[in-house]
Image (cartoon, rainbow, N blue to C red; front, top):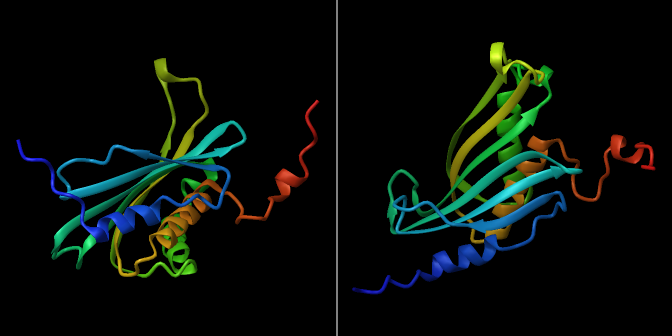
Length: 190
């Protein structure tokens, strides 16, 4: 049985760039098994966003590499993400939320100068109310963002930081180094 081909340098450099730390202590990153058969080479990270003890958002960032390129990607590397977050119920019906959520991604990438092309995706809002045997918990609302883009810069740390910025915005976290008013004015425990 032949051993797998070694990963190309472009892919190993991209993976090394994605192994930087999140600028938010509330965003926990860990490497996970990448999906198979999407590309010849793949790498994946999962993220959990915590507010206190509560998980308020999660996501996956997947790096795909086709050494011979991919026409739809307009390149040989592609970043793919899925982000889900709980919403306050009044936001679930806000007609502007999808457009705003999309700018969280593009603004995050642009803020860190993570150049890209061929970006696309969807933003989905859902509201759920339980009835009958499932009645009990209050209505819930969720946001889901699916997106992919082709990096045109080699600074993959910038792409990771831009993606983390979107995660933070989706979860309602303030920018790094800034505390929210609710955090600063909380009564001390005890």
